[in-house]
Figure 1 (cartoon, rainbow, N blue to C red):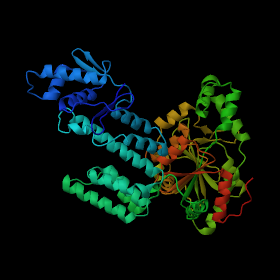
Figure 2 (tube, rainbow, N blue to C red):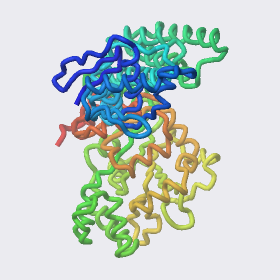
Figure 3 (tube, rainbow, N blue to C red):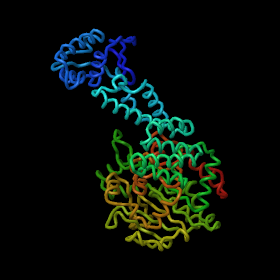
Figure 4 (spheres, rainbow, N blue to C red):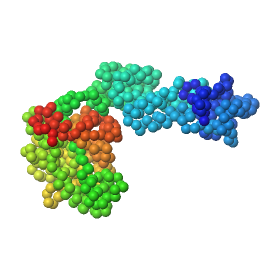
Length: 543
């Protein structure tokens, strides 16, 4: 099957890759180009005549067309150029047309991680030898396809440079971005990528100058200001926001710990504890004979138990399992040791966010002699969708008016534990016990509650104005990502933030990168001991 190339001068080659000598005249080449524009589709004789001769074809046009088809068929083969009423069809195998292969490679690249994505996009862009259908730039039948392919090429180049930027190659791609911006001065995305690459290369002033230049061009050419995204990037660079840093970094472990410790000791760090669902998942699946061929996610297994045995039985089992596994870990002990240090330095106590249901953190704080407030999500009953505030003396109050619920909670007084998925209640009555655990629970959480607005205003403000340290947070689970979605929407975090997990899968890395969160892969107990040393806490060696 012949190969065809239109991403540059028109060329054809046989299966052995030897060039097929097209006639020197334009008629045969224009016919092939017109047929390639509709590869594997029937193109009528009338349409071909119009495309090749325009609105006023000569009387001999049909005869001339038939002659051109005959000569082209001899070059390509009788099985390639076929007569099909009311015209002709050019059969082209998959990937035999460079434009089709280019589009396939670009589409597939979108599913890959940045490094592989950049590599595949470079492969796709290497297929271009010049402007698409360059031999027919003034032929009306080719102009729409030329424009479409050129738009795809620029989009692919932008995507490629963005992927390389995500891989930490900021300084390397600046020259290519300069050339892309110069050839497309009204496109804002190359400008944004260039600004970001310059900023990450330590050239903040140059990045800001690029914005001013782009603004002048847009005002002079179109009479408009830059779009919201470019304006926001300009403002973010002026503020040196954390989200401008790449998801991966060459910062050494010592430098990283120093950065996090500085934020912690300034009272501007919020730890976010993630639940490890492995124990609950395994035990529930075993106790209730969960079908092994079904997905082994906690929300799915809990849904199965709730439907087959009832929500009461599910909650009883969860209660027993959580009571049995509520021993504090090294992470909990580290967090419980911080209040005394923060008081000593005269900075506010911590807001600690958790998606865990157990009481291990609370027990660690009690063991350390610390008072604390708990603010826990209510997943069922008449107060569903609200938060319950349990003060240090054990009094419970529903937060009815989040916007005015401020004086009751103060980080100046003591630590606050925010439990976003409900909590275990150790009292016999279990009146405060509530779990967001089944698929239906999460659907309700998604549909019927606005966690960001239900939070007491002081806590919501603290969350949005702090660095976040995610410890063991399982962002791969869709149910846990609801937390981020509910609190921060689709926006990247405003302050530089970090996530610590023992080991991350490729999807997990991409999900954190999308939030501009720096990922640290290390055991949690080793991490908190290293952080404790930088914060000046006396701790034992990790167990």
